Amino acid sequence: MSVFYYEPFYDLDRFINEAFGNVQRALPSAPQISDAPRVLKPRMDLHEDREKNVVTATFEFPGVTKEDINIDVHNGRLTVSTETKVSEEHEESGYAVRERRYGKWLRTLQLPPGVKEDAIKASMADGVLAVTFPKSTTEEAPKRITIA
Image 1 (spheres, rainbow, N blue to C red):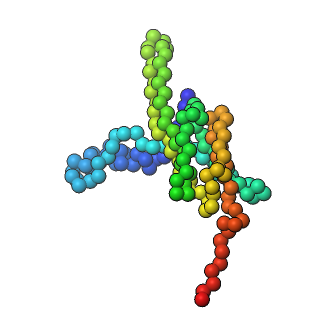
Image 2: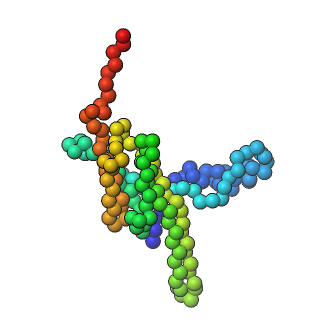
Image 3: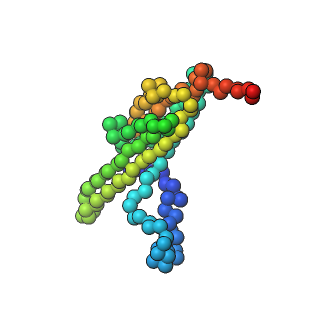
């Protein structure tokens, strides 16, 4: 059994359309609502170790291998993403049971200023991805500017 983290506001447009009819037909200028699957956010925990000056972000990706997870750093942002496609078939009490689950998982974090890409470390065990990076460096501490 897979448990997915559900964000209720992702489907707000769908709920409104089901309750009040399709608003798009009444308002031709309304933005189009797609029936495509939405991007889901994996559960995440963020821990700071002040003694070691590191931050560890752990993400839950049950049933996903480390080869299927992408970790990208761009413009000071760390993005963790994957796409799951699961199809199961079995027979139960004379009925064919087919289950298909798919979705794109994505989470983006703003990194502290001055974090170098080579300082970011990642490991995965039992469906939990741990990404560790330094909180800040002493040379990157804020500096006071005097007014001339």
